[in-house]
Amino acid sequence: MHAKARNVIEKIWARHVISELEDRQSLLHIDRVFLHDRAGPRVLAALEEAGHPVAHPELLFGTMDHIIDTTPGRGDKTLFKGGEAFIGAFRSSAHRAGIRLFDIGDPRQGIAHVVAPEQGITLPGSTLVCCDSHTCTVGGIGALAWGIGSTEGEHAVATQTLVRSRPRTMRVEFLGRLQPGVYAKDMALALISRHGTTGGAGHAIEFAGEAVRHLDVEGRLTLCNMAVEFGAWTGLVAADEVTFAWLRGRPHAPTGTTWDRAVAHWRSLASDPDAHWDQVLTLDCTGLAPQVTWGTNPGQAAPIGATTPTRLDPDTERALAYMDLRPGQPLQGLPIDAAFIGSCTNSRLTDLCEAARIVEGRQVAPGVTALVVPGSTEVKRLAEAQGLDRVFRDAGFEWRESGCSLCFHAGGDSFDRPGRPARRVITSTNRNFEGRQGPGVRSHLASPATVAASALAGHIADPRPYQENR
Image (cartoon, rainbow, N blue to C red; front, side):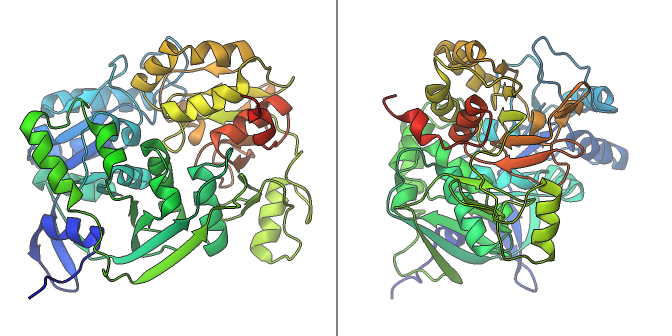
C-alpha cells in the first residue's frame, strides 16, 4: 500500500504534531523562538510576573533590532519614546532567563529574520516563531516559520508549544527565468498586484517553479518575506542543494556525520509530485519587468514603465490622493526626496552587492537623502570587507549600523526630518502604508537595484540601463 502523497508543508507539520485537537487544530512543538527588543521585554516580563520559567532557554534567542538606533557609534539611547527602557528591560530579563541575546555591539546582532537563517538557528524542516509578522521570511530556507502575538509568545516561551489550526495549502509556481535587472522583490510585487493583498489569505504557501529554483537563498528569503503581504499565514521554498550549500558551516548548523544525516532528511521534505494543494497559482516571469508600487499597499504595484490606474474605485482614489498622484501618471520619472536600502526584506549581502554595482563611480542626485542599513552586523562586516561601504559613501549614501531602521521609522527615526522633510521615498522595504516611514511620507516599494538607480537619477528610475556594461 502506497503512503498518501503529501506536500512539503504537510510533511513538516506532521513531524511537529504533539497531539491532534478539535476543529482541525494541532498542538505543535516549536523548535526555536526568537524575541526582539520591541515584544521581547513584554513577553519575558509577563512570564516573570506569572512565575512561569522559560521552558528551554537553549531554544530561545533574542536580538536588538526594532527600537535601537542605527547611526554609527550608537548606544542604548534612541529617539523612540521609551526605547531606552525597552532595551534595558530586554537585556536584564534575557540575562535572568539565561537566553542568548545578540545585544548592541555583538557581532551576531541584526534583524531577527536576517539573523535566524544567517546563524543557522533555524534549519530546513524546523518550526520557528517570533512576535513579528515577517517571521515568514525564514521560510526561504525551507522552515515553517510564522509571526505570533505577545500572548502566544508567552505560551511558546513557557511550553515550547503552540496550538494552531491546520492551514490550507497553496502552491505558487513562478515559470520561466528572470531577466537581468529583475529580482525576487519584483516577483513578489507582481504576484500581489495580480491577486491582491488577500490572495493568499488562510494559506501556507510553497513558492516553486523554475524562477524560484534559480534564486539564491537571499532571494528566496525576500520572496517569503512578502508572503504576509499577500495575506498568507506563511510561505516557504523547499530546501535543495542551493540551500544546503548556503547553510553549511553556519554557527548553529550541524557538522560532521550529523550534517550528512540532516541533509538526507531535508531532501525528503520535498512535495510529492501528486500532492494535493487547495489552490495553485502561476506567474510567468519570462517578460517580467522591475516593479514599483504607486499606492498605499503592496498590491498597488505596476511595472516601472507603467502609469497609475485610470479606472478608479474608492480605494484607488484614496491611495492616489495620499500619494499625490494623478490617474494615468507615469511612475518612471516621479521625483523623489529619499532612497532607503534596508529592512528584513532586502538588506542582505547580495542585495547590497546588486545596489553597489549600480552605484559605483556615480553620485546620488542633489537634494536626495540616501541610506543603506545592513540587515545584520555580519552582513555589514562582509560588505565592508568587500569595500561596499566605501562605494556607497563615495556616492553620497549614509552607511549605517544594522537594524530595522526606517522600515517603520524605528529607533524614532523618520524621513519626516526637521529642516529636510522627505515626502516621496523609494524604499526596499515591504510595506507602503500611509505614514509607515513617517507622518505624511509617501513610500514606493521596489528592489534594492531600483532604489539605487532612483537615488542616482533623483526620480523613480529603471535599474537596467545603469547595469549595462557593469
